[in-house]
Image (tube, rainbow, N blue to C red; front, side, top):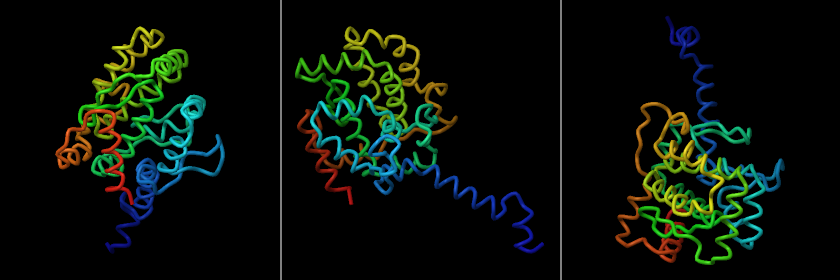
Length: 260
């Protein structure tokens, strides 16, 4: 049988291979966003004009706190791109679930890791927290009491944010930041008096996600965990990465080092 005949008659035909490549491209959409090579987040809901990862981050961080918080609260089509997971979103059909292939590749990409930490830090601020340790992911509450209480109240009274927390826990593990999860959970445990409405979500979903219960994480069976290269880069720096100022300075240094 000739090579051409075998290709046409076998399960591994040319068409099947092409379909596989098309599927891989589709399943690389999250990594394309995180590598800043594809614009995916609509500038307006349902709009065709879109932001890349860096454009989105700059746009939000250049807004006042109040305007940034309002955007993050009322828009529902960005969170799936910032914190993708192995499960398909029920709320954004334009987003994509993570593929094992792109997860492995993104864990090895320092620029991806820096973007992920920036988005995580931004969302902690939205919740009323602050990332103060890059190695362990320690979080402290916003030192501005008025702003902290406003952020806590916003979270406690807008239950769609509870789904977002589950997503973020799953995404932390997927991106190789599993060591951050205990501190993320501790943030809620320590402030549960202000988060009374989320008790059911905490016990029914967040704890399971933190334990990588696959009914919640949707992670494939036998998929090996590995840390993000981010932590190797921290070791190479040989510094102590504790304190809000150290976090900001280190992320700025890494942006200059790893971003194109």
